[in-house]
Amino acid sequence: MNAVLLASESSQDIELLLTLAKKMGMTTRKLSTQQWEDHMLAVEIDSGMKSATVSKEEVMKVLNAV
Image 1 (cartoon, rainbow, N blue to C red):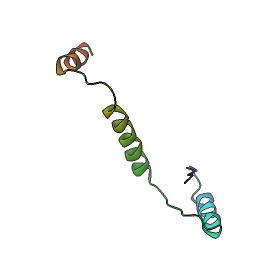
Image 2: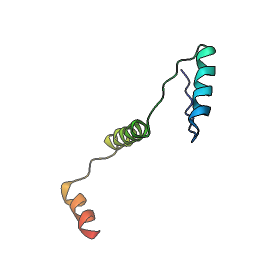
Image 3: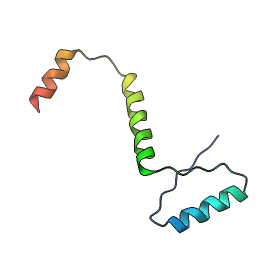
Image 4: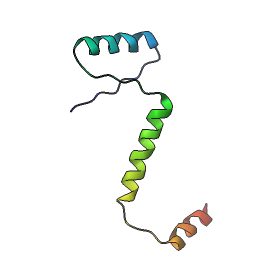
């Protein structure tokens, strides 16, 4: 599967593109800004879960330095 994300300030343009995609037999789905932000946050969390483990003390040192 391949995917494309399009963003526009014009809801008419988005509707035109969705109509065209449907006519071409493609699956379409609109995402709200909140849904997109939630997705990107989940991607970042997933990426972070694969990084090395850090001790609580190290985290607290960084937080206290701020």
